[in-house]
Length: 215
Image (cartoon, rainbow, N blue to C red; front, side, top):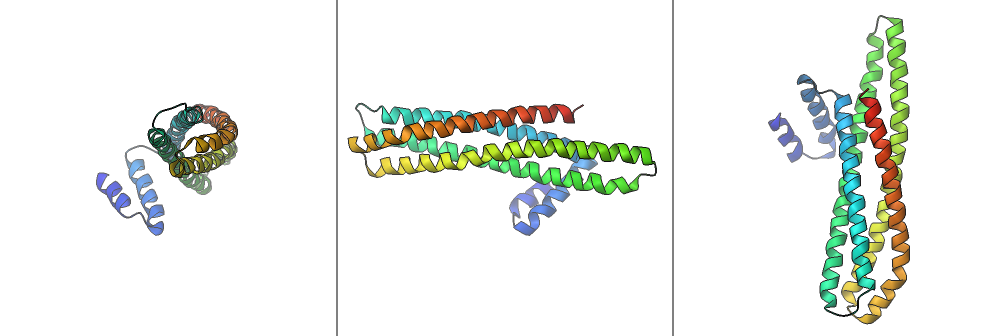
């Protein structure tokens, strides 16, 4: 198992990613962990990544607030703190994006397998019940995925605004720069508030999906 994962990590080319994922699913299935279980685990990971990301974006907002309220001291130190919060926010956002991609991959694999295996039934009643369950699960997943993508779409505008202001402060370490950043604060605060709201909705949707999948 470890060797398999190492090969996948070291061979991250576009053509190998799908093959590595398929090999991973097969290896996990041999030890009793099926795609349905992996999907639930990855939705949990995404939920946790979103929770951490929303906290980080709020931390970045508070650091930005301290910049626009600057009333003396070393501006370079203030800039470095803002840069650090931006870097952490960018890393948190990438973790969310990566988690969503993993959810998308395993969900596609699960639904393809489920649909293919419908043809293996000899009992029409069991086949019909399974087909209905598949459609229901796909419908709930579609709602979850839409929520995840809405929250994800809110991150980049915030990151772009934070980067713009961080760069501006870096090259203009003076009181005039602080005045310029004050005009940007309200918009960034509004965008982060909206991002947090979308992430909280997505987290709630994830919790419901996880609960439904475990019933």
